[in-house]
Length: 426
Image 1 (cartoon, rainbow, N blue to C red):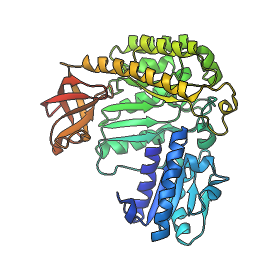
Image 2 (image 1 turned 30 degrees about the vertical axis):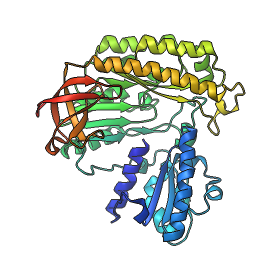
Image 3 (image 1 turned 120 degrees about the horizontal axis):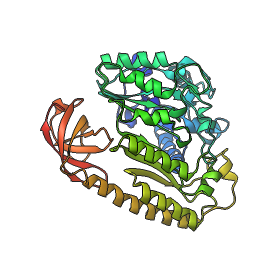
């Protein structure tokens, strides 16, 4: 979501004559768009800002901070970073040009307002560099208040975008050559909850009918709000990709209650089974937090039982880090950091083995791949994704970028697949 916010700001500035540079040392303006979901990201941010300070002193660079850390530290950001020229929260990125202009006049610009249903929150960045895939924001904010999560405090409460506005944007994107859209929201399953407009499953059905769009994805889902109607969309909507990211966070009901997640493991597993019954080949990924306050060995063992039972295609796993404003940061029953790290390493080792086994199971199969760009592994290879969101690297050429090709999988690795081109037309 931060990546898409960056695209929106870039779009606004390019329209006004700014040019983007990949070399921060020659930039006249540096905008640092931030995330504060985990402590490590915050630490890296302050370290980076220290390096930028010396550059600003040498060159007079206009320096600004946007995103979640800006919002979280709104009352103290200038104290902690007295050398910045502006700071704006996620709901104020439409004012980025104004912030830069004020900074150029040596006038500090700050805006941390939550603009509710302000249409500026849903800036349409259009397509830059003729990409075949892009993001579309359908809602902002979150009402769940999981005890560890800072998102409701920095991105505000849920606000859903009008469905007709979303449909119109995607129709325009399709006319520009976009083939895949990913719908974004902190909890897309609760899109339009409590409003008269259409619910999320119906929105998917409407998008499925748009000519030119060939793939639909969405993030992120909350298990509590994963409805039977949404589950039924998998396997029936031909453009909806066979992949869902469904964070479980812990395999222990006790810990889930402390996290204020609003569901139990039995309910979570039942929904996983329904998804697989509806769509046998669906790829399921998740998030997991290790070392949450009060997590005992028995609780961690239950997490491992869940992982072995479900056999996720991939898990983003992290050691718990306390976040400002959250209820969990007041809990006293802390897990020693060394023990939490030990558990994380063990979990990641087990999951890596499962992912590798699943990827090796792809060997010998043929898949359709939407080619994205040159592979990170080799300049001679190109990379793309399957409908199940697995990365495939294969020998190709530049004219394939943005197109669907048919690829045979010859090798499965822990993080990707190695393929061999079968046909330039999928």
